[in-house]
Length: 258
Image 1 (spheres, one colour):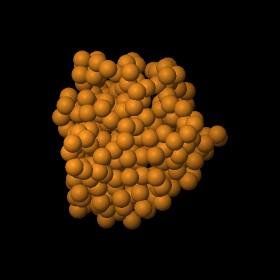
Image 2 (image 1 turned 135 degrees about the vertical axis):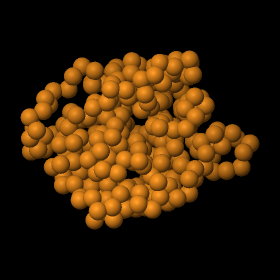
Image 3 (image 1 turned 90 degrees about the vertical axis):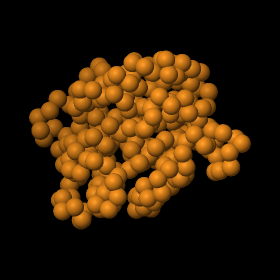
């Protein structure tokens, strides 16, 4: 149980909270991983500042919901079960996916044939990188997090969820794109993700340099920030931003590096 005193969410509760963000309900095995992840996050958050969101239900919607919303636009066929979870319609909500919630263009998704390399910059508590790995287990994931204690948390989640092919690099992203700088280095990725990073304007060009040609840059940002994307990252072809469910000010923006 979480040390914060919050009760553990049941699988059907998690599925119901994720409903606005997904077309189909997650399989039970994935709901179990999400539950373990939440418990770990609450326990560690009592000792180190991983997230200001401490209510389990808000953790599901604001962290996992956003992350899975991003994931399903990149990898539409992964994770979700063929048959909706029994709780999917329990709240009487509209299960239809509205036009603005569908993938903006077929080109924003990425084929899952062969190894897909993903880099998550400024991973913090692991969002959206680790939910993306839960969603699509076949990807090769690199998490970049400069804070050693947060990096330790990420490794604990990876171990507890028995995730494979996940690498945590404790470094600042800008040091990884300078060949002359001693350090671990990182190969260019097919997908780079960003969420709630500091110095957004400065970080976006760095994220672009970590992408292969034709790779996807997927970011969760505010509407005002999205308006400046073509200016900050002119070598990215941006699809129209997609409003994030349950939010009036945040969007998902996906662009292709050319």
